[in-house]
Length: 402
Image (cartoon, rainbow, N blue to C red; front, side, top):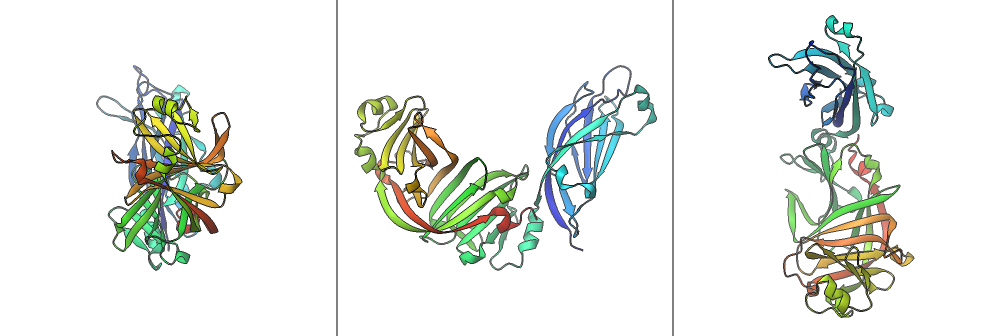
């Protein structure tokens, strides 16, 4: 009989109308949780008959072949005392009775006294919890893909690497299990210089997607058998999201143009190192946001602008892609010639207005962790024509939710 192991997010929200256990003081409550051989404990709330915890735990639960969860979630209410804690009340929730509509919403249960003496107070104690998300554990995901050609794992780091079959091993999706009930979702390109452009995004609704991007000139060994030359990452993804809403798109790409950042800034009068106030006085034909201390310089007309963002005592270099029809079939990149590169991309849907709506930005690329002394001459801006999009969801590629 096949049983699949999942991790869920359990929040002990609050309890209400708790009894006293002695005449001298209010209850000092805490909850002990038992589920499938695992035990968790909340903090103690001193002198509180209506405690609010909002404490989160990540128990492992099992799902049987018929698709129902198995096991009992036990909730035990205790009163902390100086010498010996008092066991007050309990509730046992049969997980097989959990319906989809009960996920992601608060559930309130009536606690059952363990001793009759508490009943005389006329209290009706309840506990409120929330169960959010079900994702396959590392071990279940590993077992499910174990026979797939090219599938790789890092057992020590609890990570699974799943090849996108139609890419012929060029592209892998990684699921890396982090502490605290979060996942890192990564995409790797396994060959240098392949004519592909990759992007990750939220599929529907108002979208803000922040993706870490890394380029490795000589490749990086992710695990034995997997060398990455490009990496995209959504980090600290909570397990209670819908992985059908996380998308990956792969385009064929064709280079259109490359521009050196120094040529851009020099065309606007930039010389040497300029503080924000100096740049405002020196530069010409630029857009300036004095409140945010941002300076925009045109790269490709109606498509991109080089952005110098004065952040505290430093200046961040970014590429702003404008929300115009001419940018919909193009890809852009901001990189450093001949170096490993850490960068971020941010996608905005709808596009965000800048400078009182004079233009709208749909995407930002930012060079991250720039080495001291990096010059504009070292920074390159690339522009591509994109075609033949192949769109996937992370759920479809990994079946992380089963």
